[in-house]
Every structure is written in structure tokens, then in C-alpha cells.
Image 1 (cartoon, rainbow, N blue to C red):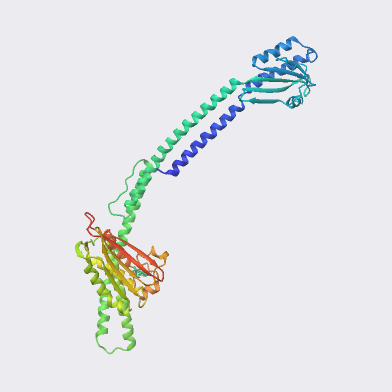
Image 2: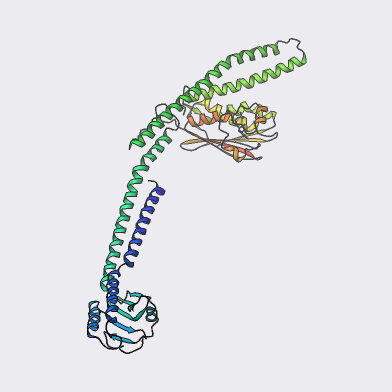
Length: 468
Ligand code: ADP
């Protein structure tokens, strides 16, 4: 399940629920008292007309009084009517009769401003509004009512409670919906990426088969087409490299035989011819080296070259390698130290392992300075044996380390050409180590040295035989 997608759906859902609930509650709050206000307001309108036709402001008028009592009782509240001089001419509670009401809201009502307020704790609303006399914008008194709004408040509380309950239920539904949606949409994508990771080595028969719905099936089909195409391209590339290397190998061998023959013939060759011939000979050696490396890699790629496991005494393999590289080290006055911690027997393809470790040792000398040293160790535990090759050479910059196992990658191109490097040695070493189910790691510090560490299983894997 994708957490960001899930959180996105849940956030959007819950946020819209919250906003809709808020708007609904605010609207119902604002209009909760509309009915009572409207009925009071229309009563006060008709009261104004009636007062105009009586002498209510100067003496008590029974018909008006009874209407005022009936509205007070009808709203379960108290009604006060004051004249333009703020003197109370009617009070349904009889306590303020004849008194002056110096209250700002009442003074303001005489100027035509209505006042409405609700005390939610007491459940009481106060509504003050002007009493119009005949002409427009002229007010002859003020109508004041304090009345119970318990019913409205209860209704509003119920609306709020139901809205909250609906919002919470909707949120729960949205969370469930979010889980279902992300599972439905994301799970097949996860499966696709898992299966793609598994078949990323472009093994010949691996196919993607995720078919949860039409879109996902289409993705699977498209990916399978891309895989087929890349397999085809990879096969073409391997065939091309292999064919070209084979084609080049024969003329190169002939050229080498001819140039060797000329150099060894003892013929009285002019110095420049002999010098050029020597250069040609070493260039042919270099090309032969590249072709052999390319052929080795091509064979591994095409899996024509399987690992031929055989119980091998690794100490002996190391001895042979060190004996071979010693003359090269001596030529550069490089000291080679070997530390063997135990006797190690393992199932390996000895010639291939020899090629892999030789590449590391040759590099340790090639990229070392005169008088430097190379330190080789062999150790093992129950499951793996470990070989490290450490040198005191030029080291590799951190930015280059991730590339050195790539084919034809050389850190310092001029220097590598000088030293006869092809940029294929470490690629071959890595292929061989991987084919044995092992691992290779490199630690390096510029101008201080490099350590390659190889870990290979002691026992051959039960199923995997081919080069991976
Ligand atoms: P090459 O044939 O050029 O040596 P490799 O594949 O063996 O090719 O090595 C790739 C590059 O990694 C080399 O060109 C070199 O720059 C760098 N390299 C390999 N081993 C070492 C080492 N021990 N010390 C420093 N640099 C190294």
C-alpha cells in the first residue's frame, strides 16, 4: 500500500467532510432564530399601525395591551415598550412601568437599528426593534422582548450532533475507501516492480504476469514487449562482440607470428625498422589482450561458459598467482606480502578464480608507485572464503569507484593506455565472482591506496550452475 496516496485520499476526504460540516453548522446557527424574529418583527409592524390609531403613548389601551401580553406569553418571555423619550409605557412584568430606560441598544433602536442577541447558556434571546410611526424613517418608540429560545437551541444542538456523527461516519467510510482504493491500484504496481526487479537480469524466459485489471494487464504486456526487445538487442550485442572478436583474433595471431618471426630472424634490419617492428609487436600484444578479454566476457554473457566447480586448494591457487606476478612486482621494486590465515578448500572454477584474482593483483602493481607494496590475505569461515588485495598505490577517487567495474571504464585513460590497460579486467573479475555467488567490494583513498575484498562461498550452490 502506498502511504502518501492513502494519506492524500484520507486527507482530501476528511478535509472536505470537515469543511461541509462547518458550513452547514454555521448556516443552521445563523438561521436558527429566523422564524421567531420574523414573527416578532411582523407583530411590531402591525403594532406600530395600531398604536398610531390609538392614544397608547399617553394612556393604557386595552386592545394593544392584550396583544402585547399575548405575544409575551406566546414566546414565554417579557415584553417592554418604551416611547420616544425612553419612558416605559408597557412592561409585561409591571416592574419598569413609567421608568426611563437609558440603555444604548434602546437608544440605537430609536434611530432604526435592530438589536438581536442570544444567551446560549440561559437559552434566552433579546430582540430590540423600533416601533414605526406612520411616516418612513420616523420611530415613535421601541419594542423590547426577552424570550425563551430553548427549542431553537435544542434543535440546533441536535443538528450539530447529527452533522458530527455523519461527518465521523463519512470519515470512516473514506478511510476504508482509501485503503481499498490504494490496495486496488497500488498493489498491482508493487507486484509489477517486484517482478521487474526479479527479471532485471533479462533472463531468457522471465516474463511479467500481473493482470489485476485492464490497465495493469496493458502495462504487463507493454513491459513484456520491452523485455523481449531488450533481450533481442542484448543478444545481438553479445553476438556482435563475440563475432567481431573472433574475426579479429585470427589476423591478429598471424600478424603476431609474422612480426615475431621478423624480429627473431636475425636479419640485419635498420634500427628504425627494428624499433617500429618492436612497437608494432607490443601494439599487437595489447590488441590480443583486449580481444581475449572481450571473448572471455562474451562467453560469460552468452552463458556458453559455465562455472566448472571443482574442489580446489585455494592456498595453491594464490601461490601460483603470486609466483606469476612477482617478476612484474620486482621490476617496480614493489614488495608483495601474503598472509594466509588457514588452509582453504572450496568448490570453485580454479582457472576462472585465478583470472579474477590475477586481475586484482596485476592492478595492485600497475597502479602502484615504485617501492610500494601489495598485501594479499586469505581467510575463511564456515561458509565463505575471503581474499583481499591491498596496495599502496594511487587510489581511486570516490566519484569513480562506482564506475570501475563497468566495461571499458578507465579512471585515468592516458595512464591506462600507457600501462596497457583495457578497462575490462575488473568487469571480468566481477562477472567471475558473481558467477560463483560471491561478492566483491572496493575501499580506496586517493593517493593512499586501494583494497579489493572478495567473498566467495566455500560450497557450490545447489541449483545455479551457469554464469549469472
Ligand atoms: P585496466 O585494464 O584499465 O586496468 P580494469 O578494469 O582492471 O582496467 O580497471 C579499471 C580502472 O580502475 C583502471 O583503469 C584504473 O584506473 C582503476 N583501478 C583498478 N585497480 C586499481 C588499483 N588497484 N588502484 C588504482 N586504480 C585502480
